[in-house]
Image (cartoon, rainbow, N blue to C red; front, top):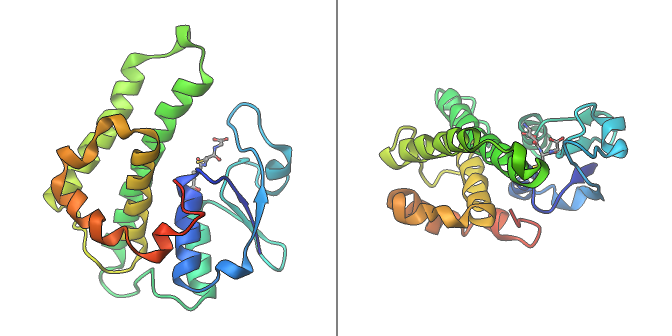
Length: 201
Ligand SMILES: N[C@@H](CCC(=O)N[C@@H](CS)C(=O)NCC(=O)O)C(=O)O
């Protein structure tokens, strides 16, 4: 398999964490590329019209995206159980959606800062996106939805979102605002799937 990747993409990190958990890391060849919303990378676009990372090319040549599809594919291929089939399934998937939504808001802020000329930037837009991060973190702190030490896609996705806050939004100092989430991450973040060298973001 081949994965269009970026070392700082939290969505890529989620896919690689899943690959690690189900024992498939060694079967994935990482393809260097430059995903960007304006200066688009033609090599990614040729496989995925959205031009985003992660994009996985399976051994039979099928292009899979986005990270949620890739994660479920890898879990299935590796015989994992990161996507529960019991009654916990829907809350686990919703937890993944919450974490991905935090990342989506973070990415919109980041692109506003690094791609838009300063004179065109909207402080209201940035404030609104960061408020999504704040209300989502507050929900996790309150335990709705709940974090625990189980190994499933919801908890892994939250871990990748927290890693991205550390990487790009360290000034938010989320640990002091959300101590229960911080305590959870202090343990959960030690999982090898979340600490290996490629798990940068
Ligand atoms: N929903 C997608 C989001 C992927 C995404 O936004 N990736 C970013 C890098 S972190 C990207 O490729 N950006 C380039 C673009 O927006 O065109 C997923 O879960 O895979």
